[in-house]
Image (cartoon, rainbow, N blue to C red):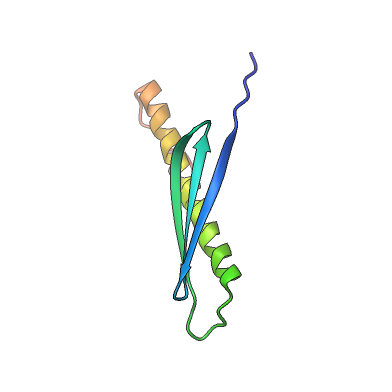
Length: 89
């Protein structure tokens, strides 16, 4: 039996006063599954390049999302097996 599913990640960015916030949302089918968050701030001694802040905040949000998804998978495995599970990050 073959099944196909589509999951997508949407990234939302907000930049204000040298600080960038990113939120990465994993959408599976028509439901949001999990979110990750990231932040970046511009060092006052550095040039303010919004794209770099967006890249850093997004990478941190995606990393957070990946860790949360791994924790969710471990919880789902525990729910099926009724045994403690540790998944390597």
